[in-house]
Length: 452
Image (cartoon, rainbow, N blue to C red; front, side):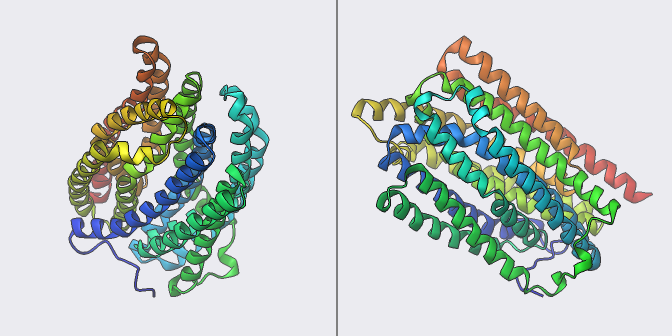
């Protein structure tokens, strides 16, 4: 058995959660690094228009990624529970069934994305001067959907067994590859925005192959032909019940983001570029939150499999404290260094630069101040998902969608363009309130069931 596998049903919750999250955090930093480098290279080498084109593609691209991550994270919940309970035969069957479901869903998503990309961009009133570049970027990214699905499924398998290091190593390799290819495709070969998209997909392919190599070395994951089947309808349904609500939740959140993008598109290319510059740092803001979330899903799943709800409670308390401290540190850094970082993404005339930077920094400051809310959201949502309930997080996703959409549509009417920056904050608040209530309801219900 690989040495990176970690049993989270024994030991101090705080140290387990943090030590599991730390390599994921570093991996996410490298993932964000190549997103940031994409933005820097495109923004500086091609210009504000290309930066705006990337921004106009953001939510459509994130929707596909969110659906993929929703399915694979949902599948990983069952894997973590089976591993925590020591049921390795069931674990292998869960993985085999997940592979088949992932292949089918990636084919559907690829076809749907290619058919609807330009139509949706037109519905969002994407400015004509950036429409072609935005559509080209999306089409190339959508071609790579099977690759993105493969990486997320393989990483989910590893994380469900408590291995956060291998995905970290894969992401470091991918980040270095992406940066080199970005510079080569955009600056040397002058492939423009298409080169940036191609570099990202090639990097994802390499990270997928790296994870696959290490999974094949884990003894308990030696799969046989019979494991790759949908014949066990109960298992297939269980995986879909876990994965579909998470995928749908991310899709709903993305639709809310598209409504925000629709409003932003009406404010002109300079505003879109400033909004995009900060959105590209969004991943940096939540990089630790996402990592703590993955840690909590695995921690809660393994301990539920072992019947240890007392450890789940202790783990959530520890994770909330760690997350709050982390969010405050990140917020402090962004408020004081944000203008310098944002300036690395922006080019153009001095007037364009100042206008774009002013828009971007205002948005960054608003999000940084409210960052603790986002971190609590990730901890509570992931704990609930790890305990096998993906419906209540879906309800929170619907609340997030409503708050984001209503704020985006109506607040700019009341206070002007800056009102759009509060859509994200209101979305976090609506979801977090529901998730805190849901967490206590779910764990109490499980405790009552275990006592019977």
